[in-house]
Every structure is written in C-alpha cells, then in structure tokens.
Amino acid sequence: MSAIAKYQILKWIGFLLLVAHLFLRFSFPEPNVFIDLILFNLVGLIASAIAFNAPIISDKFSAISFGSASLIWSIGSFFSTWNSFFNSAIPEWISEVSYSFFYPLVFFAVIRSFTQRVKIRALELLDTTIIAFGLTGVLTAFLLKPAMIGFEGSAFTVFISILYPVGDIVILAIALAYALLNPISIKSLLLCAGLLSFSLSDLFFIWSSLNATYTFGSITDDGWIAGLLLISLSLSFESGQGKFSDKISSYSATISLIASTCLLGIAALKPGYFPNFILLPGFITIALAFIRMSYALSEANTAGTERALARTDELTGLSNRRNFLSEAAKLKAGFIFLLDLNGFKKINDQLGHEVGDQLLKQVALRFARALPANALIARLGGDEFGVIAPIEQVEAAELALALRATLSYPITLVDRQERVDRQERVDVSIGYARIEPASELSQAMRQADLAMYEAKRSGCGSLLWQGQG
Image (cartoon, rainbow, N blue to C red; front, side, top):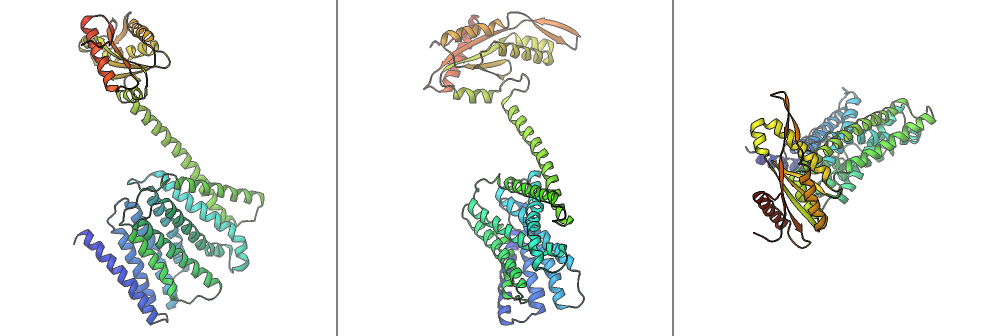
C-alpha cells in the first residue's frame, strides 16, 4: 500500500470515528466505557497517526510535533478516563504530565508553521522553549495568588490547575496571530479551527468544573478530539508565505524574557509572595535567553563573514567579480578600468603558484593604495583587475598613470623552495572607458577590454577608449 493511500484511509477512519462517537454520544448520553474510554481516545490516536503519515509539503517537524502532541494528550486522556470508570486508580500525575507536555509541542509546531523552513534551526528550539517556560510560567504565577482564594489544595495543585487555562489562552493568541499573519488557505482554516476547537473546549471544561456544572462524557468533550483531528488534517495542505514569519518566534521569546525578569524582580522585592517552585521557570527562561543571545551573536557573525566572503576575492582581499559588476551597475557616471599584468605568467610558471600568489597580493596592495577614496578595485580573475571610479576624464588619465607607476619598482618575493628572496618586475596594461548614464555596463566593459588589449599590443601601457577598432 502506498503512503498516500495509507494516509487517505487514516483520514477517513478518523472522520468516521468522530462521527460515530458524536452519534453514540447523542444516542447514549450516560457514561459508557466503549464510547468514552475507547472510541473517544481512539480518535486522538488516529489524529496522531494522520499527523505522522501526512504527505508533508513544507515541514516534517510540524507533523512530528503535532503528532506527538496528539499522542501524549490521548495517553493522558485515556488514563484520566480509566480512573473515572475503575477503582484501580492510576496516579493522577501521569495524566497531568501528559497534558502539560501537550502545550509546548503545539507551540513549537505552530511556530514551525509560521517560519515554513525545511531545515530546523537551533534558535527555533530555544525560542520555543523560552516561550513554553517563560510565558506560560509567568502568566500562571501572576494568576496563582488570586486563584488560591477560590481553589482548594496546595500551591502546586493550584499551579497545575491554572496552567491549563493559561496554555489555552496562549493557544488562542497563537491561532489569532496565525490567522492575521498568514493568507487565507485550507491549511490556515483547518489549523485555526482545530486550535480554537481544542482550546475553547478546554476552557469550557475548566469553567464548568469550577462552577460544578460539568458532566462527565459531555458532548462538549468532542471539541478536544475534533480539534486534534482538524490540526492533523491541516498538515497536508500548503500555505502561502506569511508576513513577518522570521520574527514571530523571536518577538514572543523577547516578551517571555521580559515577563520572566519582572517575575523574578517582584520575587526579590517581596520575598515569599510566590512559592519557590514557581520561580524555576523564570530562572530557566533567563538562562536560555543568555544561551540564545550567545548563539544568535555567533550566527550573526558567521552570516556577516559569509556575506563578506561572498563579495571578496579570497586571495587578495579585494572585491570579487560579482561584487564589482554589482557596484559598477550602480554607477551613473565615471570610468571603468580593466588591468592585465604583463609578465605574470612567466613568473608563475617558473617559480610556482605560491610565489605567483605572493605577487598578486602585493600588486593588489599597490593598486589599492593608488586609488582615490571613492574608487573600487576588484580582482576579476587570474591576473586581471578592474577599477571603477566616479571621476572626470582628466582624473581618469591621472589614475591610469598612477596605477602603472605602482609597478615601476621591483617586487620582493620569497621563494620558499629555494629559500631566497627574489626581486621581480611586472608591468600592467590598462584600458579604460567612460560609463555613460544611459548606456549598458556591458558596453563600457567591452570598450575598456578592447582598449586594454590595444594598450598591450601597442605597448603604450594605458589607453582610453575613443571609438577605435
């Protein structure tokens, strides 16, 4: 069976199981082991299988994260429902841990849907962890004091009780942000509908439980499994590029860091106001933020170095051909010079490439020192160089003479093989042409090239293109 056929079967199974559960719930409103324990949680497991087997168009990490979130929630739901039917109670902390891990997995998956990259980045993982620990932990901490007035139990029990509505509120905020920042598509509609269905059902359950109006096996519970199913189905659809996709996670992480700092600041000014355990997420958030900052700086330095290398000739440190052509295209008026060394090939062949490289480096340094501040020099390849400068014709002639003059005295080269210093001379042929405001750069390049070859042929050293040839 092909992967696509398997996925289609899973989709239909999930849909039919959800419809069957709704029908049986209406038909048999009393709690039932098959309906509430087996069929209900089976829909969540099928939603997980759909996510893991989705024909991913953009990102497999979202699918893995959504599938894991659905799986771990269904496990928690199964154990919790089991305790409602049977006397052999399973420890409640297993269900609580399962439900708690659901939220960071969903946060990460939605953030991945925002960024839409094929490759996962370390910064994304750090941002998601910071959001999960920081934002939810801080919101829960500030709600803890007022909540303890109406809740029974220890501070930790109350903390767990209000962690879920905080997570649901964050999910609602994420769904709203996703809807606003992404174009309308089947993927965005299914994803937002799934997030809303799950979080609203959870909030309704919490509200009705507080008011002692919740009935076990209520039809509203199907909002949970319907939400999981819709989220999983959204994974097989493609979405357009959203706005500010690269900044969503970093902005959220920054807000989480600021909130965690405020939390710890209040704890320092008012000792004992928060239980000690609730400060742990704040410390973790700040520690992760420092790691993120260090990693981001390292990544920025690497990116800056890579951008510089993309514009630079590796041997001489001058601009390369690509950057030269890019900058020349921006020049509205001025002159372009093409320089070709005379005698370089002989030295390179006789003394070796290492000595030849030394020669090119020293020639490049001499040329660069002769240029005015507003000029750009590049190594175009081999022993050919290029210069652009926004100058007048008189200055262009003087610059050509100055460039030739830099090679009027010998160049000292170290021959490591022979262990001697050598004094070598090279000359340069220069052709230059005017860059006209309305003309193509390729035309000026061709004219300078023709002038350079004529200067080499005639031995005159430098030549301005004036329409000959």
